[in-house]
Length: 201
Image 1 (tube, one colour):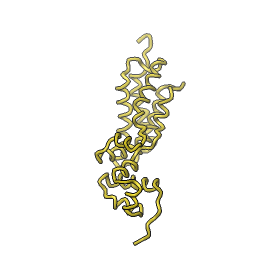
Image 2 (tube, one colour):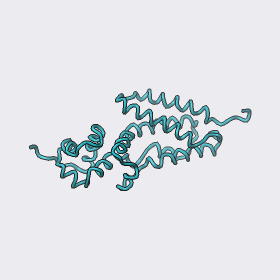
Image 3 (cartoon, helix red, strand yellow):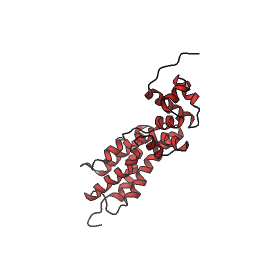
Image 4 (cartoon, one colour):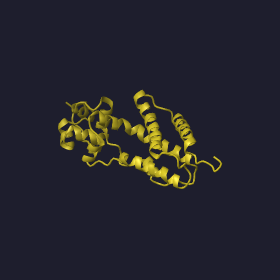
């Protein structure tokens, strides 16, 4: 029997996360221990139980670049250009983290369970940040006042999420240019309803 490796908590969580994503939340801890080349006792000594190991290894990172972008008011560039930028950054974040959230939910847990583990969940700030960004653009007269902010949030964020999840479930890595092209066309479609009306309309 080979000698067990010394692993940091960070290394163990990275390995556990990969195993959970590959095999699903019901995978045995013995499989994780084998992948990490440590004993099961090491896993339980470090993390207490399988639930904590799963939640901590699959938790999204504490920062979301897309949310940080949206928490700033719109700049002077055209609104569609900025929405494409936000969409592309959001796609990259979701492509990596939506499968993690899906695995957590498949295990029967929710984002509330993450909070009980004192894990910060930036996803919670997402809707509020997007709504604030749209409302700021409306207040500046750069987005139509007739737009329902919630409906726009669902259409925009939901489309980006579906694009990210399609790649995960289809097991096909999308070309970055194709993703950018798709998001650009999505924004073009949305902009037809977002663009402020002129006085003559």
